[in-house]
Length: 483
Ligand SMILES: [Zn+2]
Image (cartoon, rainbow, N blue to C red):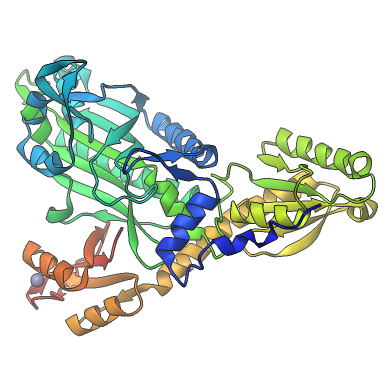
């Protein structure tokens, strides 16, 4: 049994030393993603893709449960179509990839590779909607999109990425707003319940809203380095796209009206959020809900272990699997147990079970939690129930820990001096009064790099003075340096 690989954990830069380097080390060493020969594009490796599949499955179930259906629209959008919504074009133009040739012929009309699909979907809705009876349309698409990025980072910002984009059309302004907020709440519940990632849900400022939207709402999470991550957005598009693409219907009063539309999305960026919310110096820490393997079983190879220990390991694996637990039995012979402990810790497996001849004699299994590193002997009797309870405990603990971290790194500030001092020192969220002016927002960003993340939902009216200009203010906004 060779222990020569035991030292590999040093390949991960400590978080405190260089967070950005730590992140890239974890992504690479845990085999979540790899760089590709295409600049700015990553390969999502099987271990990373498995996390995405769990995210997809759990989100998709929530979309279906709220009345949405899936469909698929083309990857390409003709140039003429994208020009129809002026703000939208201006917002996305710098990031658009163009197709100008097909085979050896120049195209009569250039195509763009979709950066988002409002345009192509709006065009189709205009064909499908004739009467108020055709509404609402509640469609989601799982797809890839392309945004030409200058600086990229795996999962957080890549030229091509995977996401879901919901596009809905409604009869009234109220219904569109209800839909926008329903999805925002769905995203928040999903992020907290499944990813154990606490988020602040709120409305974006005018300057941070989606190109062409009336209002953009977002969920914002706080990463382990004190920077915020926009983890999902839900846009109320008003009648802007309906007017540009002529999504019109005959109303109940027989008058012709424009529909009210929404769009909303989350992406593979969520995986980056999970890594940076929970990870530590030993690598990845995965919430059980999205972990490809929730439990890893490691047999202790003593004596004729294949006859004595292995059958017990297999029986436990089979019983846990039958109970719906995702289990990996690592019975490979080329690596020592010590190497396997470190490897599966690095890959963030929530719970490790070690089983040797002595454990079998005592009727116990030795367990180690990834989140707290707590170790305990568990009785073999009723092990499945114990394991399922432990996994839920780990899931809950990760959320509680992330919430406590966010609370420790959220500061209410009332003067500009406090604001700048906090931004230079301990990073995190700053809550401050803001007058509503885009100029103040821009100055704050220029002087501190902090951006207005959002104004939380149901914020009470607070009469105060703007953190930047001392003008009258009625709201408190959340600011942070952000990814
Ligand atoms: Zn101001």
